[in-house]
Length: 275
Image (cartoon, rainbow, N blue to C red; front, side, top):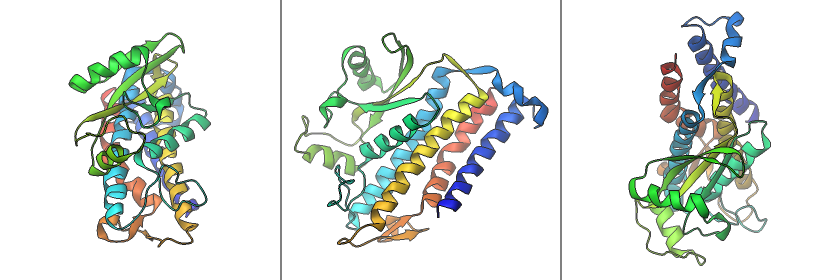
């Protein structure tokens, strides 16, 4: 399965590199023009907006189609899902944390974390400038961009909404919650992205997008590996079906393909728009 998945990832990378070359060459992909991809043509805000959109689509799909529908089939999701005596999958916030961990291990200097003014984990509470900007996000849900002087990083914050009943019920009932009246559509927090440069080349932009895609694959495959190790819980069938159809989960390839169909077209349009 991992070999097939690697092939799927390489297909995504190949498609993005073809787009890069087409844009750089005015529609003709030629090996001699690869250097054109080194020119900085995207502002950091544009790139962070692109990867934030990919993340929004991915997390919504995971939250609604895997966690929400999965719970209706008896599947369990827990904040301690990695413990040996817990047979469950990652909650949406932990899914994002897994993506962020994978990105940190990559050579791409992209930062990602999730914060809130009412986090379950106190370490994720916004402070200072981010707390003030989050108040603005709660008002209009518009992204906030700024340069973090302390870390010397360009930073973008995007609203994280309660997009599924699973989010609302979990946070409202959590023993450590400081807010128990969340509703669908509420701004629960904000995803924060950081990057050290103020502009990126096509190659750097593709690297950012692929580091996020790989992070998605890494955490989803870790979830499937966890299921394979279940001893006492019923294991869902892994294949081309989703929890909406019964006790099923999509393979990593199927999950990634669904994300790609929902998000990649818009992302590539943005790449081509900068021609």
